[in-house]
Image (cartoon, rainbow, N blue to C red):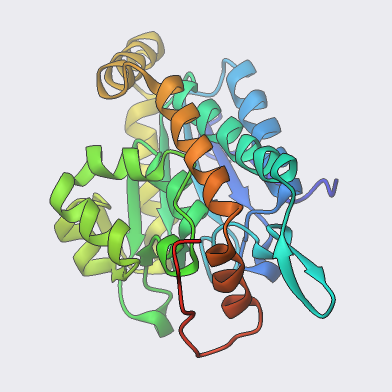
Amino acid sequence: MPDNLVLLEKSADNPHIAILTWNRADAGNALNTPLLLALAEKFDAIEEDTSIRVVIMHSSGKHASFGADLNELVVEKNGGYSNMSRLDAIKHIYDGRIVAEKMFNLRVPIIGIAHGFCLGGGAELYTMCDVLYGASGGKDEGGLMYGFPEPTIGVMAGWMGPETLIKRIGAGFAKDILLSGRMVGADEALAMGIVQAIFPKDELMLQALKWAGKVASNAPYAVESTRRTLNRVAFPHFEEILDSTGSETVDNLMTADFVKGAKKILTKSKDQPDYERA
């Protein structure tokens, strides 16, 4: 596994602040197996380093994340595409579930800063941050474009994104995004409460460091206890929900509809698939 898919360093000005960088910019930070495994390893390292009091999570390149890497989720066969095996689908969901679970149970708070496209599985993990800032402006300025396109390609979001989003912004807004598959820009994301603030892309890290500095100056055990308590109140049955969502998503990945949707993206087709609930 490449050793630079995820970078972990301390802030030069504050050793209590860790900066976690998704570093697969050449693929839009799409979440493939090596990237998911690297994220899990880095969260373990953060958990074990008790000098760390807060984490800033961001992505290199033009986009936060395109979501799960579709190249891993279907099999090329006879000049076309077919479903992966159920065992491979289970493994994919499990790999993402591990990252979500480590983020949920992490000892310290996480502030995410997202720019460009933040979609699908990437949006799920960024939504799990305790606080999320987004890049302001339009696409050409690196402005945030956030969404869950999964239903447009025949699958559901299976790494606690829907559950976290509905807690963050309420049922109406969450269902609007999750059922339509539409993307929302920075201003709308702020109005809904998906992000807590928006700034120009080149100011995001500075603003995140300011917030992280405030957290890092507080009593660490009190901060950790508060985070644990808030997560326990929000999701008293977290692992049960994660299991149920994972099973649903595996079933989705086994459908013919998902192959149609994945093929549309992988071949860059403009034709809408004829979905049949199959």
